[in-house]
Image 1 (spheres, rainbow, N blue to C red):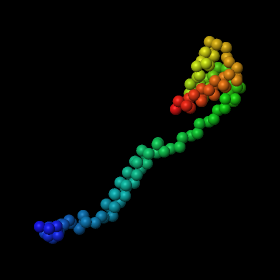
Image 2: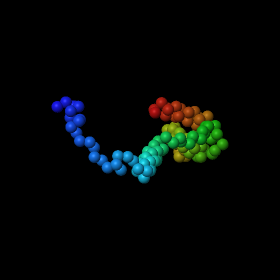
Image 3: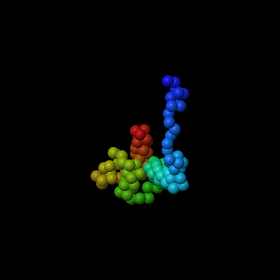
Image 4: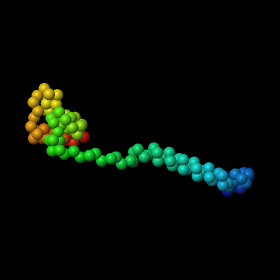
Length: 117
């Protein structure tokens, strides 16, 4: 039996007329499901694509006006860590270094951290 003969031997499809076409309520339901699926996908993707607020730039020279303990704290917050050479001064175990030394150590720490990433 060839393919054409087999196709002719098949009986015609016996679907009711209402199932052969989409009615208006069915189209509205499909549209609603599509919108809900789109909203779900958008809600899942939104956190991944949202722009983050730019971090406020802090210049190291702006920290000079602060007293030494607050300056060390602001520097630690800015860098994400406190350089090893400044830890003793931050806890009061050593005298505070000069402004230039603090800024130099902070710049070095920032450069080292960039290369580690």
